[in-house]
Image (cartoon, rainbow, N blue to C red; front, side):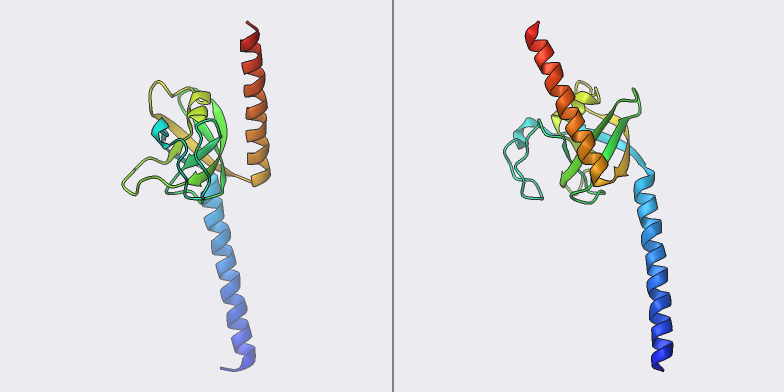
Length: 150
């Protein structure tokens, strides 16, 4: 094969792969519906798949279907409540749920008493995820301060 043909084939291949990557990214960000659960307190203090120590008061999650380190917006389909979390752990391989949330996220979505919830998961850009988590922390701190004043 001539050098020119090799360059053309390589360029076309990379272009097609780039389009496929964009299609995959669109599917990943389009949103997935599934079941959410929340971490049992027995996991507090254990290392996650990313090496972080798990805490039920941080907006984090585990998933076998979402990329580690990604930020997601989770919407409870029963009540419309929304929470942002960062995926930092994996679930047991046999777990069929879409996401396992830290306790604070389950409380914010108002399903902790039920144990499970139907949710929609949407991938978000890191900036949006970090901003959403920061806002949740500020609102939570303000609510706690107001509660303490009562």
